[in-house]
Every structure is written in C-alpha cells, then in structure tokens.
Image 1 (cartoon, helix red, strand yellow):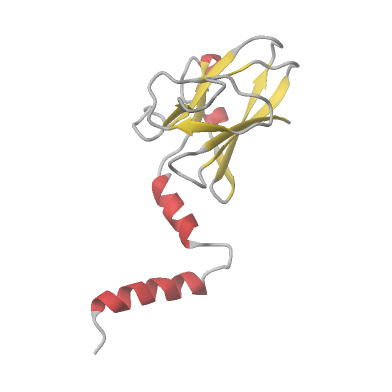
Image 2 (image 1 turned 120 degrees about the horizontal axis):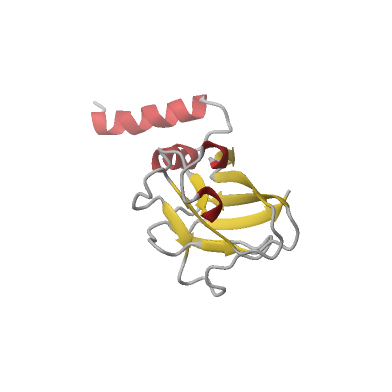
Length: 149
C-alpha cells in the first residue's frame, strides 16, 4: 500500500511535468517568494510607490522597470521595494558591494532586500530612458543592473 506521503510528491511532479515545459519548480517557488508588486522608488518619485515604476517579470526570476533620467551628471538615488518597504522586500545595495551604493552602467551589483537606508545611486552621463533590472535567480543575493534603453 502506498502512503499519502508518497502520493503527494508524485502528484505534484506529475502536474508539473504535464504543464508547459516553460514552468520549472524554481519558477513556482519564485512566484511564492514574490507575492507582491515591487517598485522602483527614489528621489524622482519622492520615494513613493508609483504605478509607472512597477517592476514587470520579463524572464525567469528577472524583473525590470523603466525610468527617465533627464539631468546628466545628477546623482539619482533609489531602492527596489514593495509598497510598504517590507522586510525582505526593501532592496538596496549590499554592504559587500565594493563600489558601495553607486551603480555602473551594465555591471551587476548584489542587493540586500533587508536594508533600511542602503539605497542605490546612479549618475547618468546622458539623459534618456534607463532600465533597472533585478534578478532573483538567487533570492538571497539578487543582482541589480542598470542599462540604457
């Protein structure tokens, strides 16, 4: 006789294998971890969670938001956080990031999602639209990147 403890994992595995090949167990776990909307929040939003700065899922564990920086040479400060700056969803720079808070175009920086004051900063050389990405492939050490659109 098969116990219920053996049936449940087999049923879950069967359901996952019957679904589209694009869904993995990591995707299912990630969706559980990010059960809320995340925003790009900074001095350009008065630190508010505004809908136009909402992060969207663009690939497995990869979220992006767009922002227009209109003043070259200005230091823009921001975090990636949910609507309440909740613990575990309040992402700023990690103390282990050698450059501190300053991001470099195209270079990934490790985020800490349990920060209070550790905001990122970026100084654009030219005005335009930029894409801020956060990669939760490793939920304990998400990576933040900024690129020019």
